[in-house]
Image 1 (cartoon, rainbow, N blue to C red):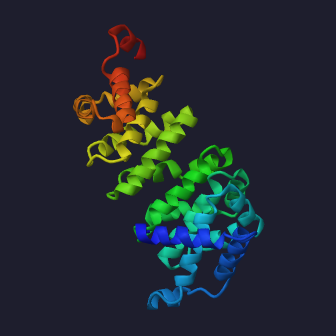
Image 2: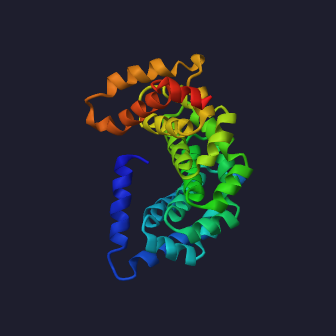
Image 3: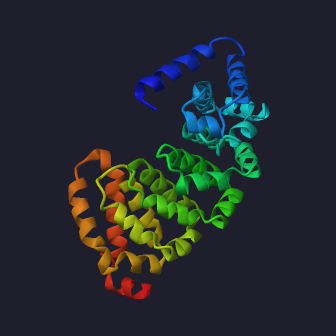
Length: 293
């Protein structure tokens, strides 16, 4: 969504919420729009059709559901059932918009996480992440996935069972920077919350995938890629060995990166990850290195 459109939407939502009960009224209005006729397969083949009102309703709901109270009311009104049903819609803007709403509801509301999982949201979202032909959908799908699996044991169990770790590795290799950044962020979060994931992720080649991310043009993904590598190498000899693989060329890359980041306050956390990874993998005293083997 463009910045001008985002500002307009925020102003419109703020205006709608001006009166008493405004939030719930706006939630009901948006759900009423989504419950109305929406173009199906044939309309999608012909052109845009009448999806505009549905798109705007989803945008407004995503904004509204950033509030915990609004998200709670939205779920009580049966909103999740409506938007989960749109995750597979023929029109990409509706698929993406529905994913944003699911994520907005689930990110701070355990009840919404559980309900969305029960409704079967995760398999559809993983399908969108893996292979949606429209570039707008995978980042929104990954946002929703992140909100369903972090701090949610049932969600993580489903995610692993459905091949989510492999899908995350695929997103790390995406040519689209926003998707790579989201994937690196989620991977970093999961490794911090669940160190047991180091073993399966190493088996899947995640160290090499993260190393490849670090060789792309510098962006927000790099901080999380370095953080994830630190987690993979901490108290896990196999992770250290993979980071030391000569073919990866990680030591030279890290030393070069450290030089570029020093003195730049905005990259302080990335620099700390860089120094930590160098210490873990390449600057360990010989006796400790021997103990790792």
